[in-house]
Length: 120
Image 1: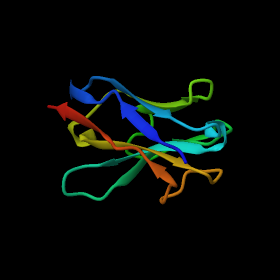
Image 2 (image 1 turned 60 degrees about the vertical axis):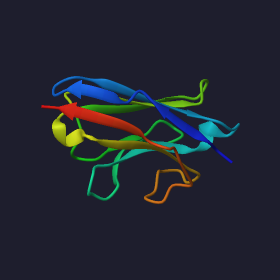
Image 3 (image 1 turned 45 degrees about the vertical axis):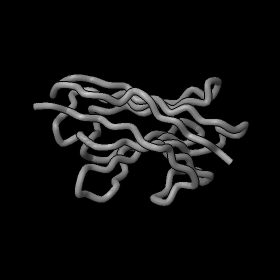
């Protein structure tokens, strides 16, 4: 069993930055693909970014060049550095963990979510 806890959300002006963190419990963190999804009001949950156990990263086109996903296996933590934020980035951001080599659309574990609000 893996438990995920996000932190770092908040209110920021357009053009600003935030860094989200996701702390994971469990001894096998390093073998999981990790990543982030988000859900805006009235919209479906969508993929944002992910990182494989080996460090391969991939992003949604909407955040490519602005967001960076990383992980620290010594701390069982995955991060999402978000720069040049836009009002359209406003959403609840969810951390996810997957036993597959790459993050799938149906991860095995979810965090509870953290709110990110970008004001114009």
